[in-house]
Image (cartoon, rainbow, N blue to C red; front, side):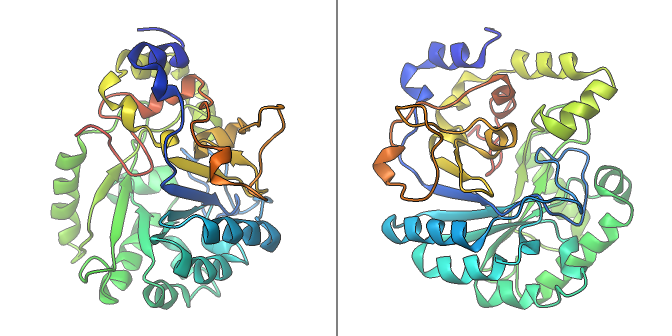
Length: 320
């Protein structure tokens, strides 16, 4: 197995190192969060100071108005804590195929956020919710004491509004490993989640498994436990050439809190921005679709996390 990710991709097919048609616009509203998770690749937390402005959001809205049929994937940090969150959802909703929000569940119980569940319902927002395990011990270890109980309460509240039960009110859960290992099989884990959470009276649509990227806070955790090299070897040894075709950077565009463009959220966390032919950093302001079509993807070795085992993306495992 080549120890350089770009070499590994080119060995499969040279055209896979370039972007294809854009389908998902992922917008990172900033790194403010009410939690401080062990695996967080954007180093989000209560002290986050990166907050997307209304001006940048208006640039995004302008792009969406000229680019029909996209999925708008809103993330953070905790995106709901951006003061412009309601504005981007309500303004973008008529312009896109789907508005999807990556939600941490506990934000529903933050002071002043009581409006959130009804807002999701009114705007038919698709929810993708962090739930890294179905046991309190594992969730609280990774995300903080008391997070599991709050998450269960939030899921019950959302179920009571019809999420997971009625058409058009989809709620998916996200699993990521608690340590330096690959996720288990997504289908099998989904069955376990349905079985275990049904004991709490909870239903959901799908489970998404995501492999932890060896960057930022998770990299610090690996290094502190002397397992970084071991984890990188695990990712590289499990490189799956069959999933390279579907890696998310080929049809997703990531927008940073400051409007800068990236191939994915992981590259954004590392500052690996897209650049034009002159080497200038690209931004959402004035972007045309043709500016990014067939553009070479920025790869580094953290990208092995997306191609190890069954593969990983913002939509879950890639293996069919």
